[in-house]
Image 1 (cartoon, rainbow, N blue to C red):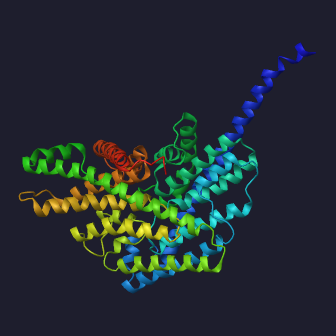
Image 2 (tube, rainbow, N blue to C red; image 1 turned 135 degrees about the vertical axis):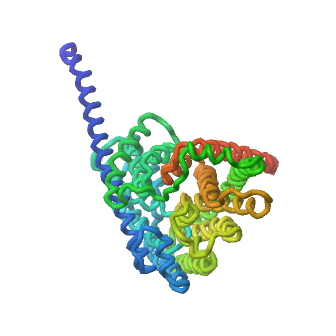
Length: 473
């Protein structure tokens, strides 16, 4: 009997593996559809929020701001912060709202299923984030599509009874694909899933992310028509070579110096911004993760309201500070007309105030990300250096608009790479976001690689400067 049953065991194992693979592919397919649907819904929901607060239904946030007077812009941010604080206070009465990282940990270590209310809280939190950013509050909204897609994908993987490891891959891939679908950056979904969410590159993770993103992105094309999120139009490689032959030696040296300064300064700015916002997020997690008493809820709501009020008042002078920062890229790339003309003071204002406002908003308990805020800060840095060169270097007569656009792209990618600790994702994301010519890929890649290496050197130096703990104490 034993010998007769032995040959059937390999067949049973093969059948089980085939069944598991088919179930996993089915889960990835469903997750891709969910991610695409979430991405399309988030785009429309953001436009609806902008229409409610600013009275304009338009793809460009800056166009909506131009149609609103300064008083309306101030009160839009304040009302948005007040509404968001009320919903967040209600969601956190008894337990914290799960993040994507928290959901992945629960998938890996928790045997029991999460209660449906935890998933619904994640979805509600995602909607509040989009509403708050649509009103003009200063933080990134990239966590919103990730949270919603991850919550629904968790329900799918749980229903299909996929093992914990594959479920984590599917949820992470769905979250990354939803983010990429919103910004029409399908390849960046692979880098974000592996390099930022899971911090692990493997063929299984990359293929899963690519498959889910390939399904999700075309679904969102129904809404955005496949157009790049922030297009940046540059001359072709041949035209660029002709222009380079015409520049003087002084101008070539100045260009090289600006490029190096963008890299070095981006590393420093990225470290400062990451430390600021990381500290702010930790403070909020300690004090506002759960607000069980009326005093805690009132304190959190007042703090959020103060963050919105401060953002709205400062934005009267520099409207580019409103929102997640994408409007800064639109302006510097030449896709939108600024309310206040671009100048050295405005660029430095965004460079200094955007990290502070974002950190204060996160410290107040608002839930958001650093994706577009980091890119806007880096773009403002590149812009400021270009304008300064034109002002203070005699004989520097290159056209300023294309130079600002190029250095803004490089600065955005460098700062984003440092804040997200992923040079691959930052490079791919910004290139896909702008749809630049191939000759710019090399410059962005070199800039990001050098900025990441320099930031690591700075961090190691800072660690060596810290005093060693005294074992006798």
